[in-house]
Length: 310
Length: 145
Image 1 (cartoon, chains in turn purple, cyan):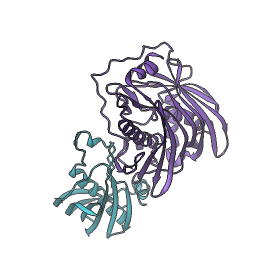
Image 2: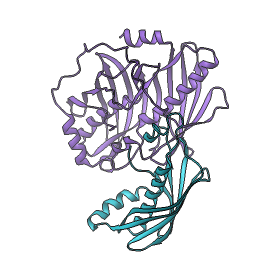
Image 3: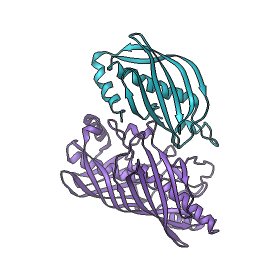
Image 4: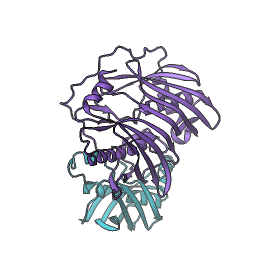
């Protein structure tokens, strides 16, 4: 699958804000299951739609000379169930921009209600020609930008609950757990390899592991840790549902051939929710970190809160 | 899946040898069917990883004059396997290199233990048109780390 996560840009105010569309299909590579038989789009990967929309605002405003690379996200909130067949409205705004960086915000709406919010993200502006041939970027933008194209309707078909006949088969985003000797901590390896499809688009001239994939590795391991904690406490009916992240930081470019060491540790754990601190190192260097926030819920209350209640 | 089966070169002596890395990740597409319950990298793909690294070594050793296409493989011996999370180190030695053909031998290791040996792998060499050499050079140089 290609790593182009925004399908159309409908409105653009130069250098300031934009609105666009992202469609979700059964062919998407990034489906996962929180509860068996209920496929949902990976909570962090979908944030790439906002990141790419914001990227186009900045790339277009700077006349295809720079491309933003995300470094810090202050707060990330996700509280919806996005599934195949949904049409998402993606919004992005640039609060301020200088020669070196930009401060941005973004949102994804499903049926008119926010499901993803990214607040206070800082990106660094990298020379575009080192990542992508500028003429290719211009061509992509030309195809994406359709001024006046109608945005998704707020009254779409309701969410579907019956999808049990199509199982989603997905391996975890980490490869091997290397240390589970301590009760509230896990360490795992995630190998980065050149065969991955997303390196075609991210980026043609320099392969860099997308930030959302780094986060997905942290999320996947944190989820495994929470599942083990729940089993230990005998709470087998509950499942962890990601509902946000704080202090998300990316410090290094991660490239094919690198081996990520992902670490997840319980920061706090109560009946209804928990916080997991995650960290990624590459060759001993600190590469990324985030504090992940999970809702602990059973299937019935998840359906009520995230699907029917919306 | 992209057909880039080695990730980086960690050691290179022009005309003599090289060492490269292939990371095996649980997200690799070939693992979906090979096998769902027991993910393991197919051995022919490890031979391809070696062939790609050997081809890189020959092209760079010839200063981007030749492209190497595999024509013969002899004495392949597997003694282990590579699973998600493993880092395969491939050591390539150039046995013979002239203007028509090249031969290498190689061993692939996981955690220092050999998992696959290739006694001899022969390439036919094709001259790269001068106009294309710069683009290949730019792409190949980025793999040295």
